[in-house]
Length: 616
Image (cartoon, rainbow, N blue to C red; front, side, top):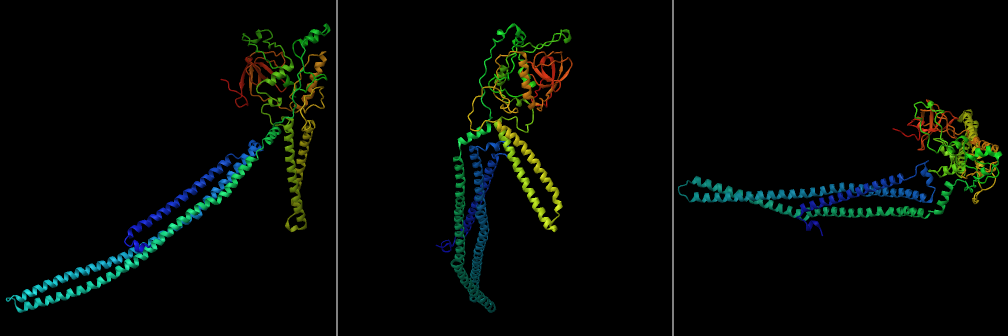
């Protein structure tokens, strides 16, 4: 089968068909190019997705990825990143091996097709030229024959006419001979052009056109083969990355199989374990004791009849001490007024009322009730130190529970040891360099390294002192924590200051008075114990920051525990706004603070202060 013999007369159709073939090839190139763009965009979106959910460095999210479930998710993100890389490989390979190669081949194909059809058109023009020459010689031969025939007839007519002179007859005869000669010449030319045309036509249809069409056929078949190879390459490039994509998926499956719920549960224990033990039983508070007192104990009974039992720290108390806090803050929290504040005086001047308005005479509740009310309030505060507004985290992490504090201190010690080792390595390197300079002075001045060496040694000493400080705190915490793995047990018995938890940690047990006081001196000594044990730790604690100012509208004499006296027109600092109970907490100076009725003062809150609200 040959296009030269089968399609010898389909030159125009072949021209259209080959152009269609090139269009198909260009369409396939465009398809592959768009596929590569899709792969690149897909890979980019996968990478952005993986990056979006990656944990941020030095953030809380990074700590969460200690859990095996989060680690499996992190492995999935990493594997998806590699998965995206394989799609980038597909795009790159398709671009280099298909798109670029086919684009270059299309240009070559267009040039070859143009050359073949140029030769075909040239052969057509040549045969058309021969045909025109043949037609021209034929028409001339035909014209000369007619002219010769007319000249012959005119000669015969003149020769038969007796009236015509002999000269005219001779002239007609010569004209007829000339015409016959011209007809013979035209005949010879026509015959010559006819032979030439037949020869050219035979060459055109049996040699030139078959050769040209055969080349076009071969060109078209090469194009078809090239498309087939490109399609195969298209599939092979996809198949090449399947094993690597399979490994990525296997990595995700392996990460999913490594999820360990027991391990995650243990990590939760390590993350949130406080180190405290459950509180002990609450003592029974016997309120019949005052009725059993003798007449000699009336003064003590009266003082206790007001319902103001104190914390006991004697040997008869059971359970742990309550959370350690400053004496003044403790009393302020426990004795903050719970009854409605007195209304402002009706008179324009408070001086019209004798002694001014009085603070409410509230019936004081037992101290343990105050503790219970504080612990059951929402939200629960497990550490009184968290009441400090805007305070920075202590250097010794004393604001944390024992177990969490131990972990933070251990982490800090490990970091310091790493920094020390890094500085020591730097010192060793400088020392070696100095030795090299001493042996080879031309390489450098050894004295130039003395300053750097001294600086590194000084840094090492500072880091060691810092590490010793944290190690001391760590030893203190570990010495007071119960042995690891030891089951928690309730503590009951005497309060021992030597075995008590660290004063900078918050206890969670409660101390309930049993009302068995025998003399007033015991109460005073117990309060002194509270102040002695707790003030040392919290003397350096920063006071609550002021959130605004207030101006006293009336004079108020604070007679109850937790209140403070103010004079009309006095300006003080607001440290805690009204919580809805009608009392505002104010401060005169560092040592004087307490509650006053909100209606007795005009409050100006600082909008920029933390926790401040705007009143209209």
